[in-house]
Amino acid sequence: MGDQADQALAIANLKARYCAAADLAASDPDHARRLLAEIFADNFIGDYGMGLLDGAQAITDFLCTAISGNSLWVLHMLHSPRIDIDGDNASGDWTVLVTLKRRNGGAVDTVMGRYSDMFRRTPQGWRIARVAFTRIE
Image 1 (cartoon, rainbow, N blue to C red):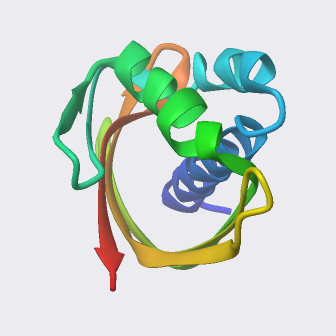
Image 2: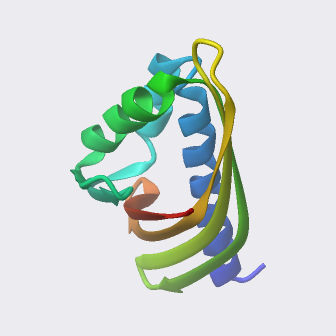
Image 3: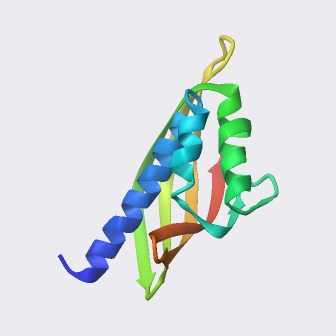
């Protein structure tokens, strides 16, 4: 496999680790926090449509409290990846379908949308530098 394909696979695996950690946050937030610590760039910016999240700690807190705090379980499913690499920077887009079960006997909900992400290669490997999530209503 060529270097571009290897790097794209590394980025896709990084995004998969993000989804797995976000899903785990509902049942084991401490473990999710440890996993998330190896995913985000220090100067991460997140836009989930509710105001900007500035920094790796802000996104970790958001995923482990606001999102998963109201959910018994969460399951991210990513589709149709597009990854473009330019040196030590990359962009990626995914269609996402999230199914989640609300706590306290709540409903099973589905969230559909798109991720548009920016990645940065660091000495530790690729990290997520920016996530922009657009929900499809």
